[in-house]
Length: 258
Image 1 (tube, rainbow, N blue to C red):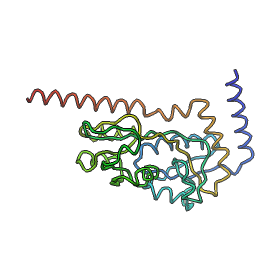
Image 2 (spheres, rainbow, N blue to C red):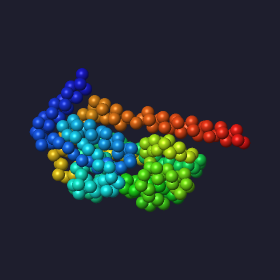
Image 3 (tube, helix red, strand yellow):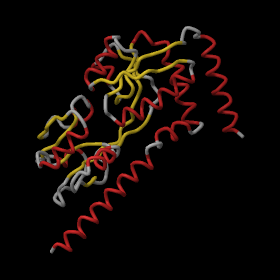
Image 4 (cartoon, rainbow, N blue to C red):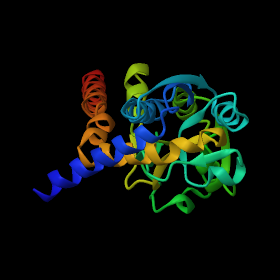
């Protein structure tokens, strides 16, 4: 009963806010990192948040650094999701205080052994592939042996070619691995890090901070955020299962050949 009252109260507060910001209607253009499944999930969530405050969010796919630069310059209205602290480097960006989602970063490798994961420092002495423009990973690996790549597929190709020992990716990388029919790749446990991701607005859209935060809180309370974040869960698990079956099949074929 209390939870229902809370949801009703939040909905009433949101409606009140909307009545006071009649100008907060129309369309916004949001920077999204192109070909990035995590950003696609983040945009899926914030698109619904904008819908709840009476606005339409359109995606503007760009390479990572260009994406956030476009939001900071005002060419776009905001950036889909980034780690906390981007407003320090980009002074024209404002962070919506309610997190959109949390992202776990894992070490992916083709090595059968020799890697024990206990945080970023455990990658010392290994060649690490990270995607350029993923600022959090760049900060965590600036003292490591690093090769920068553009896409998840590039990172996977580097692993297969033996040009890096580890690639730092999210679980969504399994979609690319399965599609590429990649080699013997493992996702090491535990995660290197878990980070909350936030939506950022260009400073001219400061009036949207409170209503968007309220909408995200409401989405979390009513379960919408979990549904949208987990929409790819079954597909990822299917990709991992398919990949595991593929490895078993390859092993059996090898035994028969021997």
